[in-house]
Amino acid sequence: MESPSARTPGSSLGDCENKSSNGNGNTSRMQGIYHERQTRHLCGLHALNNLFQTPDMFCKTELDDYCTTLTPRNWLNPHRSWIGWGNYDVNVIMYALQQRNCEAVWFDRRRDPHCLNLSAIFGFILNVPAQMSLGYYIPLPFQMRHWLALRRINGSYYNLDSKLREPKCLGSEEKFLEFLASHLQTDHELFLVLNEEDEEKNPQRWLLPQFRD
Image (cartoon, rainbow, N blue to C red; front, top):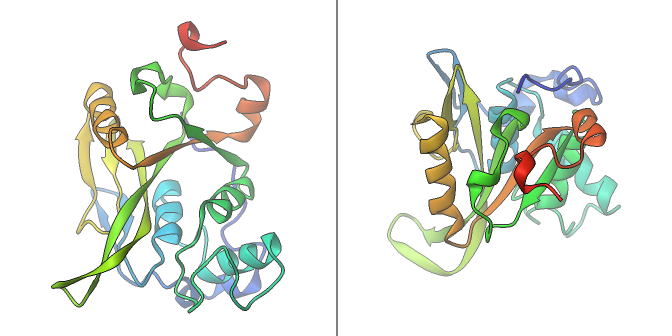
């Protein structure tokens, strides 16, 4: 599926024109693939920019503003970390995608991923548990969640997780579906990123015809 229509990165917020506000100084390109690496708790921001393969498609200031749009308060906003380091929840991710003419569809992990019509899906976002630790050695008795992007680029599927040193090639459609199936057996949540206009015309386009209602 080709890239959906998108607004000019940062066009809605003047602060986004300052690229240093993005918090994503740790970036790289491998064979033309854009990849932001993890800083603070900004995995949601990195996942979105990696998904769209565009530096500064979103910035931290913009996502913080979405938090207050969804719940109009700055102090202890429920959609982000109270210390301001990110940790954005699913409402912010979905709202951000809507601003770029996309939508996220939750995929029931009880289903076999082979039901997916991959040609109709722009990309994928996984939400996975992340163990917290003190330093590198002392695990803490609670978990956070981590966002990561998956997408087809130049005919192959890639894991664009910001915790990876570089994008990881997952291979063909069949290999990718096996990858999804292995993740959906655990406490991972999968969201399909779709072109909003296409989805309005055909609400179940992301499913192969034999699996549609």
